[in-house]
Length: 261
Image (cartoon, rainbow, N blue to C red; front, side, top):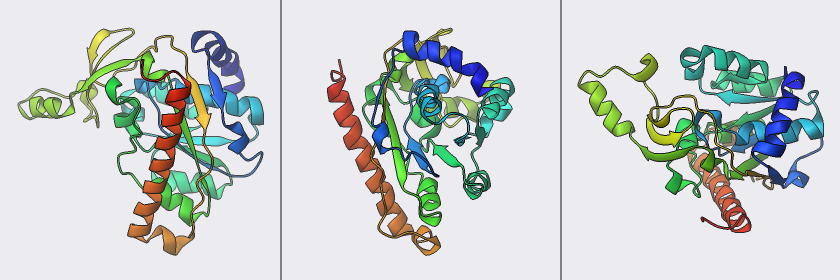
């Protein structure tokens, strides 16, 4: 399936998003890695498949990487979930993550989830991982460095105007059913294709916008192992280290790409 999709992804890479990429010297040429990203652009998250294009160009399909995906996708959008599963998506669950790592494959995690992908356009220059530390515990337990992935530009493929989750929850309490019958973690108001002005975490068609992806230098932790992964204060310190590293890299990338204009 990946080989069949690559010509399509390549076209979008070259002509639709005009992708630039950097930092691949930080990616080990072989072996297992834990990739941790921040993404943009709603459910389409175009920076994710554009990263995969670069991965496959360099490592082919033999070096497998699996991405943890919110389990609600399987319930809300089964067709999309089926396609995603065929190119490496697995439900976001600790057992799934550990199974991937035990088999010696690489793992890609976006801890910020829907709040990150749908964060308002005005927050596009901020790393948002929502305080979720599960990836830190995985990295410590399996003694893996964290390789962060960031991008700039895909926030312009979907203009999120506001996060209306609190308002939507109040309306639900008054009797309004949830969109698609699922309690979402984020309920955005946005401008984008194909809906125009829309509410809710609906699938979207990304607008054409230049995207720059970057692989950051690995974050190596001082202590690793099972005991370190169960030390809550140490896990929090490692989480803060990763977020600070990603934010500093994103700040540099924003400047390189011409700022917030």
